[in-house]
Amino acid sequence: MRDFYTMVLRKSESYWVALCLENGLVGQGITKENAIQKLKEAIDSFQEAYEKESDIYSAPLSIKELHEFLIVEGEEPVSEPYELRAIYA
Image (cartoon, rainbow, N blue to C red):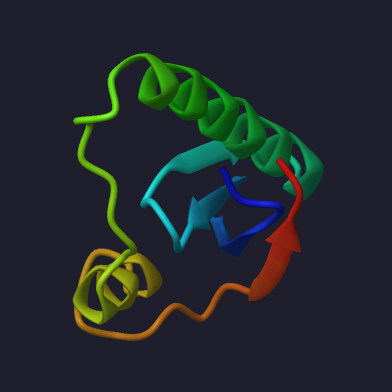
């Protein structure tokens, strides 16, 4: 279990998406705070499952996956704001 996780937070139309770089989990919400809270819940849920079954696959996000997250519906980089944060879960 980690002390903190790194996430990328991106605006996508009318909602925010938070992506954890250490495990690829995602949270989505109307506000930044809501997306972060949903991601924390996903991380907590994953950690509980992982403690029960340690053979669950978990790996950091690849650069290709991160690139795909930052591109929306085409080949142009996201023009919407995004930020990198550490979250404590």
